[in-house]
Amino acid sequence: MSNNVNDWLNDHGDYLYRFALARLKDTHQAEDAVQETMLAAIKNNSFEGDSSIRTWLTGILKHKIIDMQRKLIREQPVSDIIDLDASDESMDDFFDKTGHWLDKPQSFDMPDHALEQSQFLSVLDACMQKLPKKLKVIFMLRDVHEMENENICKELDITPTNAWVMLYRARMGLRKCLEMNWVKG
Amino acid sequence: MLTCKQASQLISQSLDHPLSWYELMQLRLHLMMCGACNRFRKQLNVLRVGLRKIRANVENDSAIQLPLDAKARIVEKVRSDQHAK
Image (cartoon, rainbow over all chains, first blue to last red; front, side, top):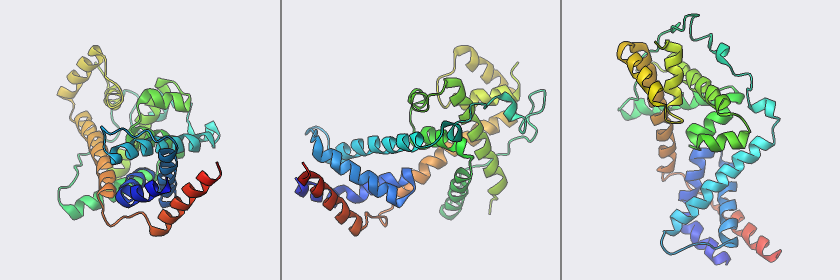
């Protein structure tokens, strides 16, 4: 059986590792995710001929990545990762009392030019890392792992209203951070 | 009439679930007249495209490989797991 694992890793290991790294952004976690995928693949060899091995393994990996997020969430006090007070008032930094923008959003575009684009993306990445922890968890689940809202609410045990308020605040902060830090060359 | 604050909330929500017909109409009406909220909507789109791009860049970077020692560890782990049974 471990011959299988050898073959899988030779043929798809790099791909799976990159897939995991793109989402987990941590080499150790990415390695763990690939390992969990191999263990699961060997255990319930549910591969069916109508998909490619890579597709099958990637499907398992996706689940493992979500599992890891889930575990991460469970290991922390809820009050650390969820802002249950998230309310309308917390947006007072962005709007005046009559609901008008205090600072009107500026236009920014993703640059076409390769070098500029990679600079833009690293600013975006840095801004994301700077998100408050309470917003980062849910933002990552939704906009990086692209989990469905419904599942996010189940995982975090929050209401849809909580979820959208937190996502809104995270996006609001992120685009503000980009506005302030992205200076076109 | 929606305020900019309300409009921006609907714009964000529209990324997560379909808006109701009424919400959509109100939002469209607001966007027809408000440049700031249009730019906000575009900003959120750029965020989304940017995040996908960051992911794709890692996924397609053939210089990133599963390190050999990691591979060896995984093979060893699978082997010892099977012997444990």
